[in-house]
Length: 462
Ligand code: FAD
Image (cartoon, rainbow, N blue to C red; front, top):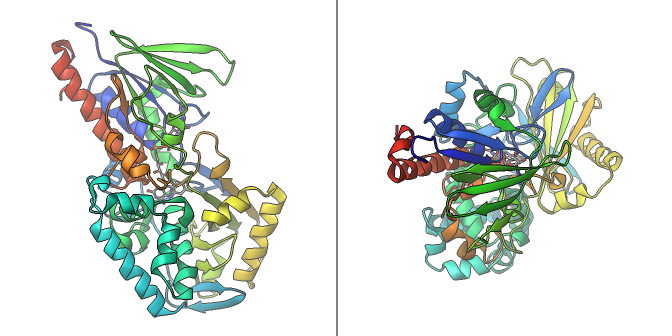
């Protein structure tokens, strides 16, 4: 290998894989990125929601704590769009519609205070650097969030609110996640208040034009080193290197890429499906690991018409499908875009509907929420449960037992195989920020290895 550049195959052209690839290429590595889809970006995906208007069908929001993301946005000269919330919120509690100034649903404030206090206690308890070492981790990891709710919370309004909150924060059905995962996710994302807030919180901005543009900009730096429609099926290691086997979705032909190191930057449920030879010493996912359940419904209007009615476009409903809506209109007001979130159990049921039934259900709900608005000119549904190469969103859900089983080895290399992806990041797990941090971490990992293993590769040690 003396005199050769480190050859790295990165699997997955999402934000994590692209970040790692760009960093490694800049440090002198010979990088190839293999991507299963016919586009880059993974869970960051632009969809046309009105004539010439592209909105975020996947990830959208960011805030001041997302420092690596902000740095990358700045480096690529991209602009932020503010998610200003001017006007009243709309609430649909049962069949009763009301509009008020606050953003929290008009449920019993004592019940909501109680649930937030109990959640804060859990968030304070969890160890963000090693959730599996949290005091009482075995118990918290065994218990589902649904059982915790049944045991801890008595007030009916709190029981109504909890699944809405977990749906909005984590796209999770409370039955599908452990209490440890819930507490860790809320802590890792910057705390309940930050995660939940628009102004000053994790929803303060969007990337103008769509978050996918960031991935496209990273991919442009790599040029033809990114190979689309190349799902990886197997990874074989021997004493000298590693073979990555992919099958072209264009012509079904197999290809083998020989490398010194591999970075697997795909969600855990998909990593678990790759055949590793030798096999993995610890799983990447278990039967308890779930798909995040989120469907985005985007309604396109000629302009943000709700603003003229004194409404912000923000709504919360206690029944589905659109459990919440938010104004995602372009900053120049050239169109009105309302994004509806279908999450948790509602998303599972909604995803099973036929496309016309999805549309009909979404439009009927919109009429109930905003009876004075005309019908939208366009309605776009992005169903992440049906996405073969995501297996749910916003992120994988760690079910009972998962943190203790998967946590300690999330980032542990398997020989020449290294791990990235938002689900390997203990900081901002599940978010774009987590994806970037995981990409930076793995690039640094390979840089150190390369510089120590072979003097000729010191080019990697910047
Ligand atoms: P991915 O984006 O999943 O990238 C993995 C890539 O690997 C994909 O391109 C996939 O096609 C590819 N792949 C999979 N299997 C294979 C294989 N076998 N071979 C080759 N390639 C493969 N985050 C925020 O910060 N703010 C938000 O507001 C937000 N909202 C969200 C809303 C929705 C609806 C969704 C879907 C996500 C949201 N997220 C949000 C989460 C955010 O999108 C993710 O955290 C981030 O994009 C994950 O990046 P990643 O690179 O880790 O994974």
